[in-house]
Length: 168
Image (spheres, rainbow, N blue to C red):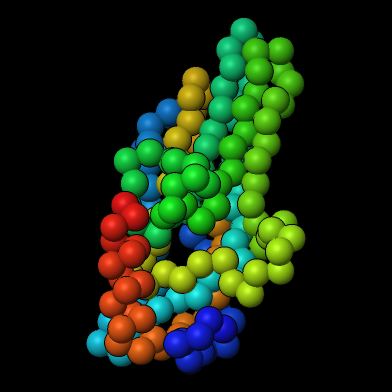
């Protein structure tokens, strides 16, 4: 547990799903953490699993699907270089039917640095984002986020909230 935070729950698992509102259209699902800001409550993320429905396999067309989990609302899926993106998964199928790229960051593939936690979410929700390209049908993504509730002291809580909101 990071310094200045006191764990107030055991491990919590939160699952969510997002479906594109139309094929190849950026869409998101807001996932409510039900944190209590009056008690300076935050959510410490220990692991993430993110799965996407494979893109359409259309002849003579390269298709893809991208999904991400972000701590604030985004206008696109983003990438791991963005400070508010916790995880991303993408699959591309080239026009010859070969899966070209697959990238996933999940709880069982966490960085080898032995981090004690992945992120701290200080606002009341996170977002599951999705967008495809050249798909025949709307695609979907699912996630599972593992973490604990914790209480921060006032100065740390204020800094976490400001940092999270400025990262959008």
